[in-house]
Image (cartoon, rainbow, N blue to C red; front, side, top):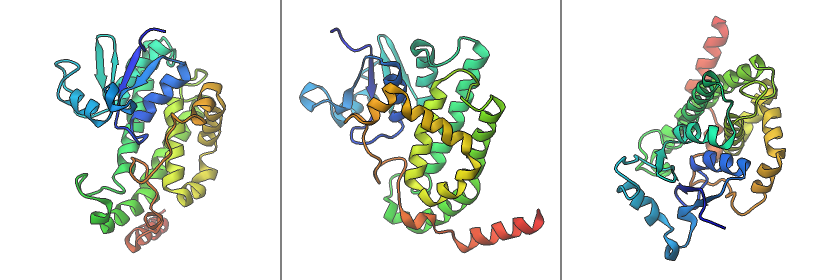
Length: 259
């Protein structure tokens, strides 16, 4: 066997934003190496990421991982990586307008992931969750009451408009893989909220189950390559973050009277 076609650089030990890229590579059966998960003796570990951020892969410095190298091409940012990989892996239609539509949806997923992250780090990434617990509780209350239903409702409407099976209509794409990952993460982080929202996102839930049963995805999920969710990751489970603040409860009651 020759060298892997793709090299993925992401922090070892967590799924993080790199997981969206891994799912695409795994679904396509692509040959890749998850560089930072290699032993340090083979160029892996956190040091591999730091070298990339210093410019070891070329003059176009990435801000943060994930970073993908494919031959001479180096690209960072999850949505940009998937936009690049989609045509190569057969995970996006050929029509330019559909590729742009897929990219638009992926960018919206990126927004949702960022807002989810901010429920446990609303003040500063450099602070621990414990140092911003009160602010996190308030941010999470509004997120679960307002933002999360809005995002998931949007994707539910996208599926409905396209016929209900896939985000892009008839064609399976990397967007479907990313929606699966988002739902998995949200169910871990906010199980009570997601249980409440379940009747309103039936198409999304059905899509997630379809993705889970795809042979290569299923094999990946059962393999040691699929790391578990944890409180060191983007999606984190803190039971107290599902307890709505009085402000959020009052705001919902007020909106209910206005409607």
